[in-house]
Image (cartoon, rainbow, N blue to C red):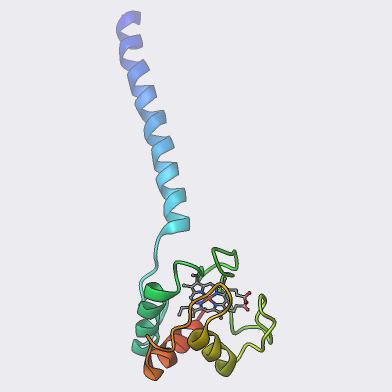
Length: 129
Ligand code: HEC
């Protein structure tokens, strides 16, 4: 009887522990990495279009929902302060448009790639960060 119990409980305990560990890993990972939908973020259609542009051109260097740096500074709350943290330029549409159009020493400019409308949509999205 004892031997059978041992046989049964040992693998079950193992599996439970492994499953719990896996679940915790997956849940913790999801919490950090899961991408929120446009609807969850409450984006209107202009902002959602701006987000697509952001994903295509900006995301590889700038995190949108963190102030932690990637290649460039994180853009969370980019318009929430008077000045941009890295460049010290005023945080307004005019200066940010210049940065997007002309680039910075380690950032390409997008004046040839993005239309005026694209940049307006992108700014609308950046204002939601
Ligand atoms: C190749 C990487 C790269 C890409 C792509 C890129 N940037 Fe940048 N960006 C940077 C770097 C590096 C800086 C810091 C430049 C400096 O210190 O002058 C910067 C600075 C900025 C700043 C000023 C931040 C501050 O705190 O002063 C803004 C705003 C910005 N980028 C927006 C964008 C947007 C919007 C896009 C997409 C259209 C984009 N960037 C694409 C690398 C990049």
